[in-house]
Length: 434
Ligand SMILES: Cc1cc2nc3c(=O)[nH]c(=O)nc-3n(C[C@H](O)[C@H](O)[C@H](O)COP(=O)(O)OP(=O)(O)OC[C@H]3O[C@@H](n4cnc5c(N)ncnc54)[C@H](O)[C@@H]3O)c2cc1C
Image (cartoon, helix red, strand yellow):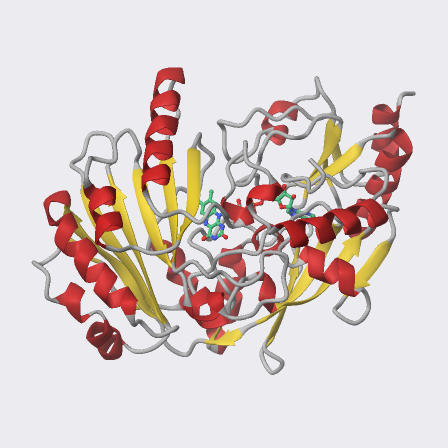
């Protein structure tokens, strides 16, 4: 019996091997543009099962890559058993301690729905289907990061299976190195089975999208720059240039305010005074509905993205952004950072000094379109004032950990990896030694 066949008796969860019914669907990541070759797919039954899997993989000379959904898949999976974490679905909210215990397969949307009745919130990103664990391990940019920092900053403890296949509890006191690495250094150090994170009071949330036709883009961008110049941490505003196939180019502004509607409208004054938008979905909303603001696709599809951190958005940058239509891109998004993102953070990425993030997205419908999307992304990225570093969760499949971390942080991550996983059993999507 070879080691992969033996896998079926080593773990209790579902094992799919090449040739099994459903193997191809099970190995596919969320981003269908990524081809992912794996030795097997295991849907672990629980944390002990994850430990059994890691011990088996180690003995067989294979790696284990955890992938809740594969939004951040890179295709670096040769010689890897793909671990699906959907059954690690614990979700406990302690409203008095303002703490959540979240299984590795739990989505951001589930945490938001469970925290909302207590007037609490996690740190959600734009998509409710992204896993809390995947986002937190990569640092994670939340809507509320300007008020509360990286998603990873709120992680207080992690239950993991280490590279020896042993279950451990990782906290700042119990294991400071691994705790530091896991709060933003990626999935290269241990398999997380659950984590604990701080919840924040959010008695009121006001948010939504204002949408105009693209002819208003210069005025919208000007107002956006004025609003973001002195916005408080509770207010987060993103700008999107949109061009969906078959429709006219548009410009949108997405807003969340951890506070009331009147206060938000005051803070958004320059945007309020623009011509009436085509649509305006802003409203007082429960934190569980935050995903409706950008309404990103929740089903798998192919995508090509490129992100940059911008050192500013001055007149020249604004002119560059609007100089030509964004096509063949579908969207060019500017996220306002600053606030708590810029405060000290003892995490691998450290504080984000850059006040804005740029995210450029297109669909590689065929090879020629893929090339055109890449060329347009490169042209925009090179013309805008990019710092050169990027958040780990926003890296593209051809980028590496060195694009996210400063040299000293990367060296510390590499040293931890060599010491804690000398046989390279745990495989993150952005390996620190790769
Ligand atoms: C539509 C969309 C919206 C997004 N919005 C945001 C956003 O607002 N903010 C943001 O920061 N990012 C955002 N992202 C990026 C997203 O956070 C990353 O792709 C991240 O990887 C989480 O996605 P996932 O849950 O599918 O994880 P996957 O892509 O499946 O996993 C990512 C990596 O995390 C590691 N990992 C995951 N689980 C474990 C585990 N249990 N143990 C060890 N390692 C693990 C592995 O290295 C894995 O390769 C978005 C992505 C998309 C497609």
